[in-house]
Image 1 (cartoon, rainbow, N blue to C red):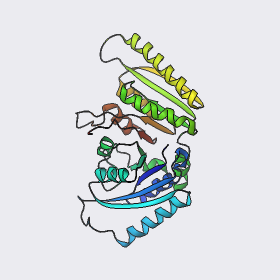
Image 2: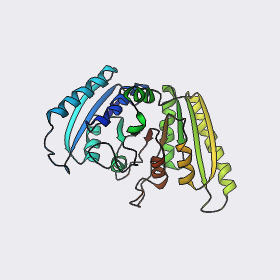
Image 3: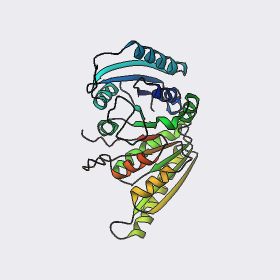
Image 4: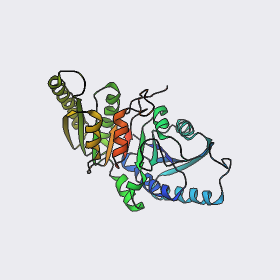
Length: 282
């Protein structure tokens, strides 16, 4: 399913845990990787890579290849989000993997670029991992090797979330373990809370059936009543999940360009998040 991945590196020591994670992505089907370094046009000395960077590149390539994944290397100059998406398009990648320093979607691990822009323009899923949560290389490899063991899927039951649900169903035959599906009925707007709660339960039950039929080991559904941003972030902040899958939205609010719920989740969780972009700006 995710046979070819673009792995984004800034060649710093902090990116080593992401490289260890990349080597374990065979768990979600990755067989080839494009190790990508973008020289940010907004930084000094943007036209060159020194000898230490070359050595780091070679070391990271070797680490991924030792895990049995074929590696290509691609380096370019530009604004990282657009350059990364262009590389992913050129290599027909099925997923992009990036690291975060844990301060949300707006500060990513590579070249000081803005990862929210990447998600907004990407034509493929983006796996976001908090570097500090990955731990040592061994811990990172173990964490990313069990991404499918217990997945949390927060859904607002819109057409955008339905697209993410389709990806989830497609993952089921590839070793998907337990799936926890959560929907929050917004009690801050409108009436008919009980009707909306019952409707959500029925729709989650349908998705549960689809997942079990496709090969998921177990599925749990939960409908919560409350403010979606707060309740979804609270649920996602709980320990015990190997990965969160969700569909960001494009909002006009510059403070929350991917939607308030996605923003709240990214700010609160240390679990790897697989974002299924809605194809915004295209």
